Image 1: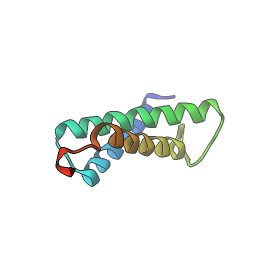
Image 2 (image 1 turned 90 degrees about the horizontal axis):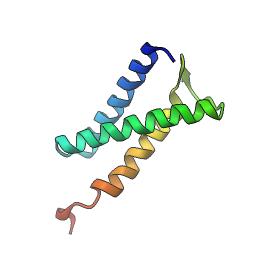
Image 3 (image 1 turned 90 degrees about the vertical axis):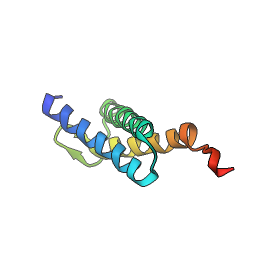
Image 4 (image 1 turned 135 degrees about the vertical axis):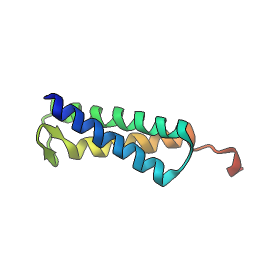
Amino acid sequence: MTLAAFIFGGLIATFYGAAFHLIRGGGLGQLIVYILLSWIGFWAGHFISEQLNLSFFSLGQLNLGIATITSVFLMIIGYWILIGKNPKDS
């Protein structure tokens, strides 16, 4: 993987985390959590799809489709586990 592909993937994962934060709301701490979860999910999805030789919407060297799915999935699970229990909801 080239440095350009790594930077591009990082920007896309950061965008996903910021967009999820825009939809769900919250403070700075939650934004950081969403971005970290997005990065972890994005790169895990990319490398897993690379190892299993799966391809769904590849963009250059990035397996963007599967990486996007795993990124969103991990952010939803992370929201549900870490942030979903809001004291105001009781």
